Amino acid sequence: MMTLSPEIQARAAKIKLLIMDVDGVLTDGRIFIRDNGEEIKSFHTLDGHGLKMLQQSGVQTAIITGRDAPSVGVRVKQIGIGYYYKGIHDKKAAYNELRSAAGVEEHECAFIGDDVVDLPVMVRCGLPAAVPEAHDFVLQHAAYVTRRSAGQGAVRELCDLIMQAQGSLQPALEEYIK
Image 1 (cartoon, rainbow, N blue to C red):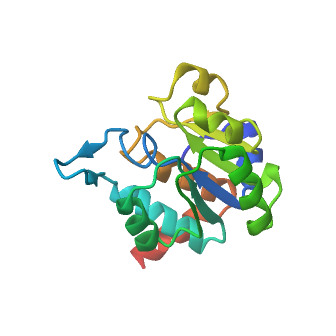
Image 2 (cartoon, helix red, strand yellow; image 1 turned 120 degrees about the vertical axis):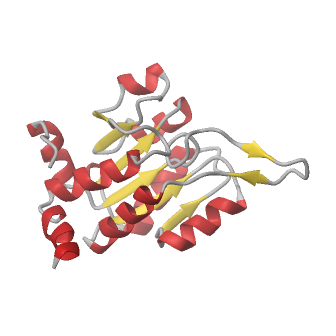
Image 3 (cartoon, helix red, strand yellow; image 1 turned 90 degrees about the vertical axis):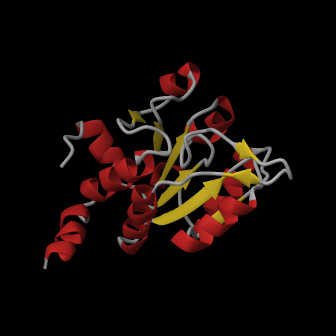
């Protein structure tokens, strides 16, 4: 179990919706482009299962991304992400629409990002998080910076943190050893 500061514990205990960027968060930030223009992305299985566990604990999940890559749509379906906003240039407007659709207040949202385009959401949500490779200005606005790297389980770490703060992590993990 992680040792959480009282501030992070309090923020995470209130989370009802986890919102993520994709490139540089769910992936390591690199984009492979084939000669035919097809993009190839790499996702980590730890993140996928962590998101499924988080959803089973009652926390909703969402993606707001500036890009529109078919591979992300496939991954969204595989994991069962509840809300998927793609090709978004105004993340703040998408965030407001998302909160209305999900029925949550700002303090009930967590967001994990890596670049300045994520800040309009990060500075408004209850638990702003960043990956360690995030831009320096983004790191200054993150209440929590993951130990794990982007595309290497950073999102799983945040899922576990939220579940731990809400008391649902240990029971969920123990199901696997019964």
